[in-house]
Image (cartoon, rainbow, N blue to C red; front, side, top):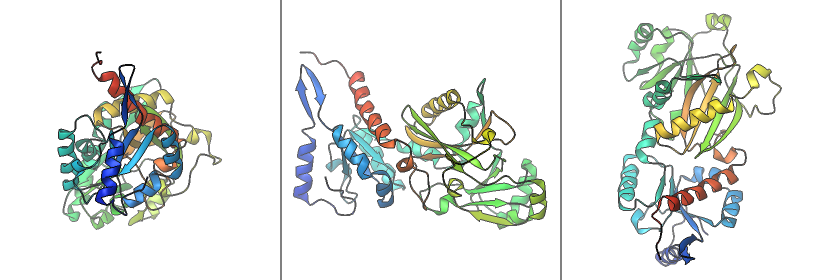
Length: 356
């Protein structure tokens, strides 16, 4: 199979590919038996390189899964047929193309629905479902840091922060997540005066000391994987009093390498309880309407069971040499291929029985 994102198929080649794809099911014992699961994908070049690695493609072939690149220069409805459509492109035009396609081909599983992705592309609405969930049980409590949305007029930020009762230091994040490097460029503001130097629209989030470690919780359908990442170090009162200004830094999880093998304080390194994560993941899958996403979680330093969700990323990928993304997720090849196969299994279970 050729990847066609960089070099599109000719018409004859595409027709042959479509003809092969249309033969992906046969009849045996009165039931359709899948011979091949065709997954069309629309990804950027960087995303393709980080996610669709040779090991994944090789394993997928052994399980009867075929990845086919979508030619963005041709109508989507003219391509396929597909069983699953996997995508991570941005823009109103692409969202409309997907919505039209879903309406025309409701039998195709789109990962994930454009309106659900749009919800987590705005940091004002991104964490609202976590806040509304107010998750607390015997395994721990999950919340979100106190935050404030600023849409315009940087000079008004200091007064707005005072009225909202936010406590310095504050993490500043762009309001919209659009896949660009800029949308993941974060800043840390130490003092009130420096807040007017920030560039709206943005979200201000109280910085919570967390031992310099965050937990990336990858969710692929019902599967969950957790990895540790170094994050920003804790800030003490002396540092807060003796620092001023706005300091820019890369994506939090890019601050350093994996913390899985580091010699850490057990109270910092201990992973969040599995039952708590499973409940959180299940609730967010339902509330967000997403199957492929990851949650960035921190544990408040000095506590064992008080956690904060600080970010949610749809279909995370490699960005600016990030250590995050499904391409770096442990055992992601097996997890992802099993997930794709489960979608087809569910489709057959939900379909009316075939009568002879």
